[in-house]
Length: 52
Image (cartoon, rainbow, N blue to C red):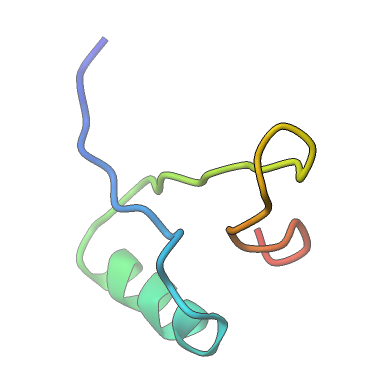
C-alpha cells in the first residue's frame, strides 16, 4: 500500500467549499480526507452529511 498525504476538508467553510473542490481538481488531487463525526462519540464539528 502506498502512503498518501491527503488534504482535509474539515476546515473549509461552506461558502468556500465548491471553489476549493475546483481547486483540488485542477491541481490533480484525486482523494480527500473526510472526518466523519456522529455527534454521539464525538461532537459534530465537521461538515454535515448532506454536504459530504
